[in-house]
Length: 77
Length: 222
Image 1 (cartoon, chains in turn red, purple):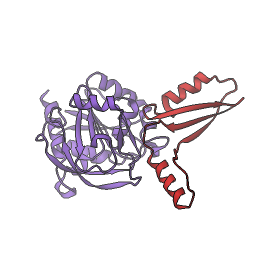
Image 2: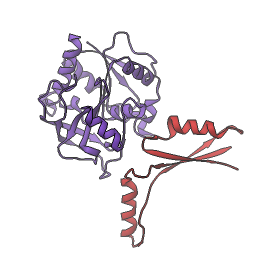
Image 3: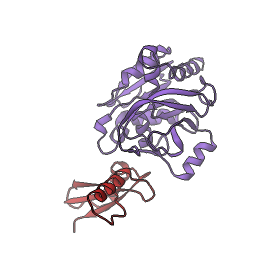
């Protein structure tokens, strides 16, 4: 089974890369982009039946640094 | 005084660290990251700069989960001394031994130059060799040195006199100009600037020398 973990900087943590992307979009003429946040997506191939708690433990212990990052787990239906 | 320098794949300041510690009088052992224990009688563990595990996932994240880092955390809990420089500081925040985190520099560029640092406290064995408020010239070389911590953490660090060094001219966006912080017992120091690169007159200055001399002196006397 595939599980997708999306990791983003927490609200309130400045994201200089997202800010640079926002400026670059403006320079290309895309008006009205008021904010860009950049994160990462991690795809996990897991044994069928792996429960969400196990994935959450992976996030807490390694995949995300919860001091600065939040994560969302997408389990395939 | 016995010191161990931890070596990860991608460490590149490990030998510089060993040279600086030996010059100050320490006995230095190099320790591979797969080792699960520290040698007996180690007073100080130094986690050097570099790009451990290629900075994959996050700087210091993979290194922080390596076998040796469990031993380093135990050493810190027992009251042992730990010095983390640059990538070593990132490893210490990733392990949770020190609070906060290090993000991409605010200007997004890798910065490699000597910067003025202010000694923010002399109340630690790492900084006892400096005059209070002294300004040092110490090189930085990092892409992710932008220190972040929430307001409470920052207030606590300041209130407990645990900010060791601040940047006189903030190069990377660090909150509160923080360049280095101490643990509660002041025996763990994490800092982005490289004192081991400022420990030899022939190689870019000597302002980092007092850190090693003070530390080795304090531990040798203990």
